[in-house]
Length: 375
Image 1: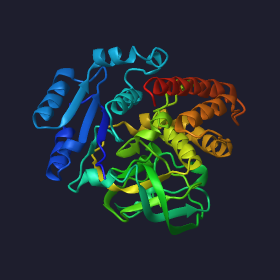
Image 2: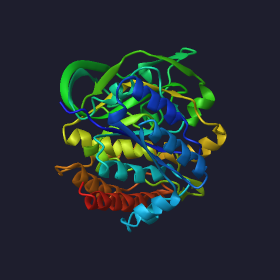
Image 3: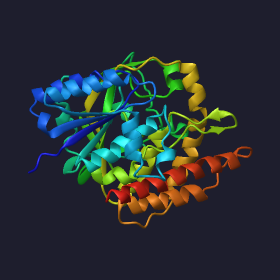
Image 4: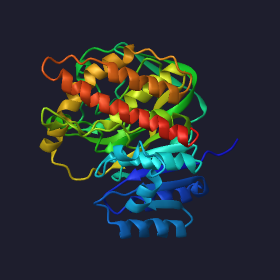
């Protein structure tokens, strides 16, 4: 059996020294030749220092590439429709790394944030099942949602919901059942100890620290969804045409719609994964989330419309019919559905429709870029 090649894709405005710990972990467990990293810089990134980190890691035998702004611009010249839709000062720039990783031959891509530090266990092994058929405990839920935060223990002991879990499904009885099934896993959501990935309203009201993992891994049944982010999340190259970090940031009623581009990308991916009879898992490996400094009230402002829009988007998405037989074709179908959707808001429905129309345009540009690289 061929050992899959795994590429980490990271955006950062900091010096990416965290990759030194990843490289050490890969070397310790014998995975250095099967791993690589692509660092996508931005305007605030200290480019010389970031480039030196990449150079030093290559000297240790870890294939690490740093993309400064001129290198990114040169690469995007090949995709004239997509290029103007990838803004600076945005996590959206990780899309450049996704395309390049596929072209460089990655079997598994792993999106990590620059505050997701590797833990002491065999991190590669935790994601290496992506792309293979697995026999695992498979969870179904009555309300159609699974909360990844329930896989961890917290101090103080509490119940919290992962960022992106619809508010209209929280704090309600939700019967879960499980059985052992077999399916091809194409996406694995790793966990986040220390500072779990929750929204700002949760952080403000229920501060909690993740201290341990309760269960190593579960598979989600078709029709049971969970928030999927881009923190310690691995996905197979087949899924790349459907895992575009969607463009956000445009304002609705004066407030920018932010911080849920990865969450909505995950919703779209799960819809298509279910349609194509593939599977999603959650669990190991866990990262140490040493969260960068944030002003939580400012985060709350940025997340306002994202939280409001998540519930109707998730509800509509479940009912949109797909007919395509590939990730790329299905993603194009979702863009059409999104553009035609009507939003249940008396005053802001028009602004919402325009916002998601722009998103659909970006999704089509992504499909075109994937087609261009033969994917």
